[in-house]
Length: 273
Ligand SMILES: Nc1ncnc2c1ncn2[C@@H]1O[C@H](COP(=O)(O)OP(=O)(O)O)[C@@H](O)[C@H]1O
Ligand SMILES: [Mg+2]
Image 1 (cartoon, rainbow, N blue to C red):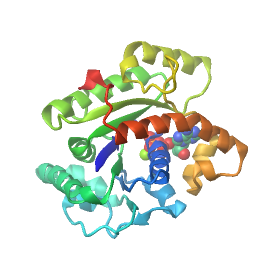
Image 2 (cartoon, protein in one colour):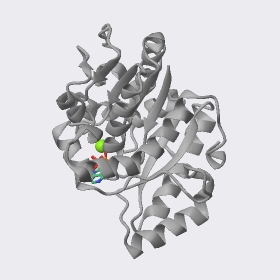
Image 3 (cartoon, helix red, strand yellow):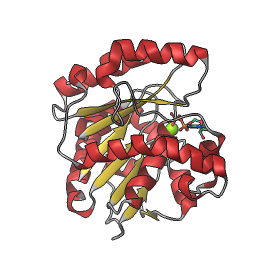
Image 4 (tube, protein in one colour):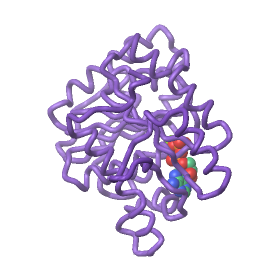
């Protein structure tokens, strides 16, 4: 089992939407998937529950850190939903090391049961995010092309506690950054200018798709994506043509990420290695 963590210290950048889209995509391609929601807001848990595709575990995600886990259902797509207990974990610093250890040993315990584990995280740089990053194989960072995009990427790499460089050097040398995934992308002059700036500085962290140079994976801002998050419907099964068009735009990027997760190929993220 490979573990992918979706992480960015900013809220509202589309982490949970990307986690959901990617989960359905991966399950749809026949892989055994474990979905873990570490954000008490539950924006990954809700659409997966509503979709009816994932089997709910008997315990929620705080139990992974506190070590109170039980057996998982023997199903190909399992969700460990979030809970409010997650909120209190940061306030128990004496238990942080045991929390991170429990998370790691849980992943080891379910290793043979799944092909992939996707962990959606909360924006605050706390012990939940650290535990997930400390045990993951891959991290994917949705970013929004707003004013603070550049600062955001710098924080992602260099934050003193959860920055990827720090995590890699201090806790988890095997962690690989799949890349930056621009989300909520709009064809405005402002976003274009920011996109150019991000590419100029961080091209090596973008996820190339297609045959042409300069094409990178991204997720456009589309109301059908927000609707599918709210209703639990799978984007590509929605009847309306805007949803199908949105899916067409997104699919190549998800396919690329899938190939990276499942294959051995590896060439990105040099700066964070
Ligand atoms: N590509 C998108 N197009 C339109 N709305 C989106 C898109 N991605 C996310 N949203 C909506 O934006 C809000 C924030 O997204 P979310 O995935 O919850 O962000 P995060 O997990 O980073 O806090 C949600 O209401 C979600 O439905
Ligand atoms: Mg979220």
